[in-house]
Image (tube, rainbow, N blue to C red):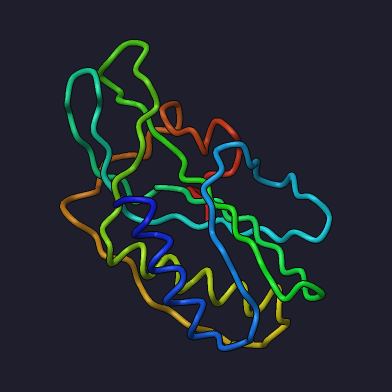
Length: 163
């Protein structure tokens, strides 16, 4: 899924908030879990995706595609920013394999961004939403172990494997 598709879906979802604030989303591979600038909030979520090794072309599914969001609402300016980082995984078969970008289905990006909207409402607008539960879509069998040595999020200590 392309970055412009994320932006389009994000804008559709943010319009549903109907709060009068302008929001934007940007991808930033430099954000780090737990390291937030003043006024920023964090949300970490895993979803289902697929990876393809650029060396051997082997593909694999993962239900631990970790996405880190940092968000900030500047009330005075009536605008908010979300920074997003999709964590990568390595092929376990190739020696010195590069970390590969995940491929997510549009349905899972929609669910992911719906859940982000809930977090924005809770963390930035201080709304009480109670419990909600919409599930991600799995594609194929994912019954193998999570390969922590090949997971960028695990290596940085923020993988949601344990949650």
